[in-house]
Structure formats: structure tokens, C-alpha cells
Length: 52
Image (cartoon, rainbow, N blue to C red; front, side, top):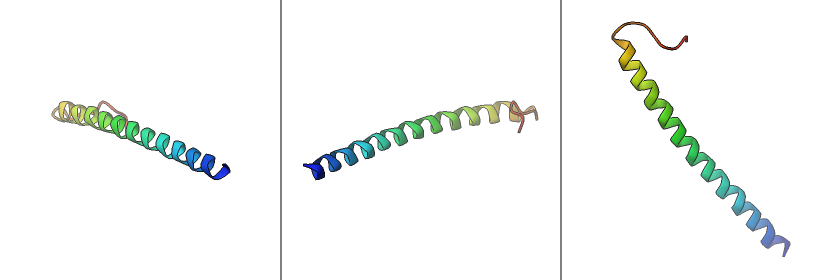
């Protein structure tokens, strides 16, 4: 019984981790798209909209 609970707990943790990684990939893609739009829009003027 303990082994079954351990396997179920491990599956739950790995499933949650996979979902979190999936969400983080979508957030990273959205941030990259915003950065690219800002880079090309402000790149022609020579000024940057961020400080670094």
C-alpha cells in the first residue's frame, strides 16, 4: 500500500511539474514576442525602451 501511494505521489508531482514547465514556456514565448516587437519598433530611432 505504501509503494502505491509513493508512486501516485511521484506521478502527481511530475505531472504538476510538467504543467508548470508548460506554462513557463508560454510565458517565455509571450515575453520574447513583446521584446522583439519593442526591439524592431524602437530600433529605427536608436533609442531603447529598456535601461539595460
